[in-house]
Image (cartoon, rainbow, N blue to C red; front, side, top):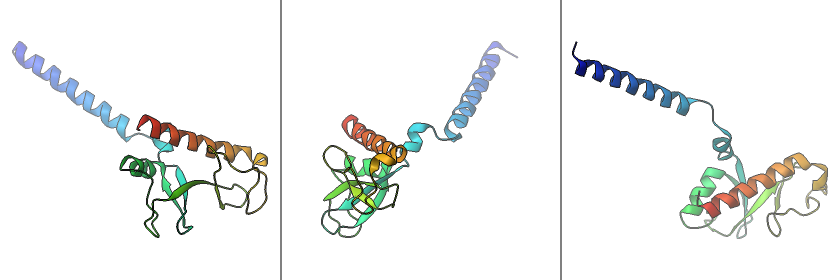
Length: 136
């Protein structure tokens, strides 16, 4: 065997090893960033009051393609972000800068009594804003 053949075999083994490594990384469980892209974004249409949800990935794609997502009911892009009340599971429109009212307008439950899911919802909204600003 010549030196050239040995070098080619070593390069082939290294390439196969690199391909195997990339396959393992890309086929493994999703990381936190990938999982957050599958989280729901709740929306309410200002035109027809339709409530719907998209994944963060779908929401970001719509934003990158020219603005807010389209309402699946009426086609309007006049949609507002909402959060799901952890107590009654109804959507609550955000006020101000991603804030929720002190109590749910549907069930009257104070949002301060259910901090874990509220905090999760606020973190999701902050992630959305960051991705829009960063262009991600």
